[in-house]
Length: 438
Ligand code: FES
Ligand SMILES: [Fe+2]
Image: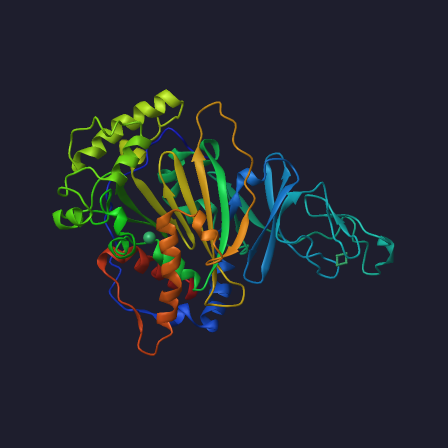
């Protein structure tokens, strides 16, 4: 699916649907039966974002995507075509490839050596004429799934009757095409971390900023967690999180406690942002509230000087976190110079565990060669790898297991959500539509 550049990401606030007020029952985070239901009605029917197109640059490049009991090989079969196959040999069912990525001119099964072309057809098998039901060469194929690409991402769908990816994405291309992720951003970090919580605890954690004052108080002097407009975009959603502007919760009292004169004094954290944008913090004589407009200007100049193309982006996109959620499990924190990609992947057998997958992509100046693709790090939260993460993400990761643990209590029934947490409510509503077969 082609990306349409030359447009601007819409920023106008949209009218919102009535999402109701019911408690979200906790069983969906705990029960193996609910996990089964999700497998049968969600994961096997929805468009799953399986990985970046940049991992499939040459014909024969592939990676294995695992979800639930399934393992899927995603491979560039032709210069202009990416295909997805269930990772199961058509002879006796052996997995053809282990998890990971690689390059192959053909896919040979390690068991009895059946060999498949990149189009999935059997091209060779030992003693092929020994099959009374018919020679498998040319007649047997790997089972193929629907596979489409958009804006640097590969999506697959296990449901042959599903609508198109474009229908599924709804308004997202209008919003995200201007970033032109595939051309403009490059992968520099890739971590998969086991968390002790249901995958929806991961989704929920990143769909609201109500928790900023609780677990990220150090953000309050330079982010606005109160005036944070939410938009519902079909099955998906976003909020616009102002960066370079203080929260109304950043009060004189709080500022003084942190050693500042009052809430208007430019803070050390804000100075870091200013300097990153090429703004001389020492020469700046405005108040904290004045920084953001100055950042807009400085950032454009900084981009021009450093060969960074911001032409397709609005001023707000230069500083703020344009925060999108792609149903059912992708979170994007997008800024002009980099974006964070999170995927909240369910554990194959345990509803109380998940894989939180984290990638960072950076925008490079024109003419600069992208760095080599980083190796993927597979780890468990608490093994020390989390210290590579931004402090706020360490805090988010540490907050997730206690949420899961509390939900197990007989004294807890379900999520009692604030209006500002309505992206969570919307996510569960769309999930319920899938689960009810709608
Ligand atoms: S299971 Fe693959 S060749 Fe036998
Ligand atoms: Fe957070």
